[in-house]
Amino acid sequence: MTISPEIIMMSLFLIVCRVGSCIMLLPGLSMSYIPMQVRLCFAMAFSIVLLPFLWDTIDLQNFVNRAYYSKLVMVELFLGCVHGLLIRVYTLGLQFTGSVISTAIGLNLQTSMGISDSLAETPLNSLIGIIGLLALWVIDFHHQVFYALVKSYGTIPIGQELNFGNIFSSFVNMLQTTFMIMLRLSSPFLFFYIVFNISIGLLNKLVPQIPIYFISTPYLIGLGSLFLCLSIEIIVYQFSHSFLYGFF
Image: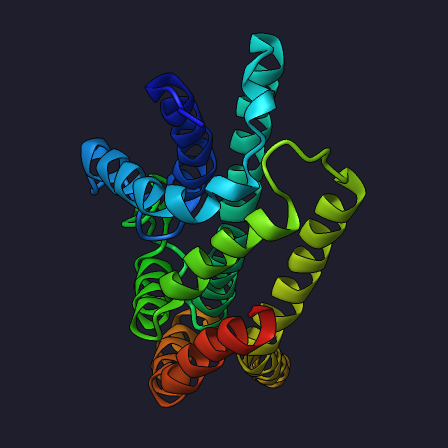
């Protein structure tokens, strides 16, 4: 059977839709510092590599009806966005942890433009986010992500009807798991913040003449920074390995 170049290009475009939309939201590759041309070339190259392996799963009858093909394009874009968004939610959770830590140790007053996202965040929040992202790349999380993306073609082949119940259930489970992991990572700093403020409040009741805010702030920042230096390695380790062994 002779296959026209048009069919091949249409099949390749469907793969590019899922892969490209995933890369558009994937942590690290979606940063504004990476040129759009680089991301596009990477998505095209990866899709060309996948095309021979996925060719048998593509129903060529889908290309007869142009309206149905347009629907397939939208579905593939949606699936790629869901796949990338699930990963992005986990890395955004680390920014939640960074915000909690910044507040707990008194370093939440000054904000600046974020490194990974164009959002205002504290320097400590940016530092923790970049360290966590680098840790994920060190353990080859992108290999796991692309492997899961390829496996998704076995779970949801091109042309199969979507089960939105399973998709939204996976998204809710990801949010729940991410929140619990990030809350566990930031809980020591919440405990430190509560104990420190209770102690300062009791001291203020005993000696109300002392300007307790100006005296306590250096101790809060100093003790909090020391606590962070002692625990940052454990936080990054738990963050990266919870992703690797908790989701893959």
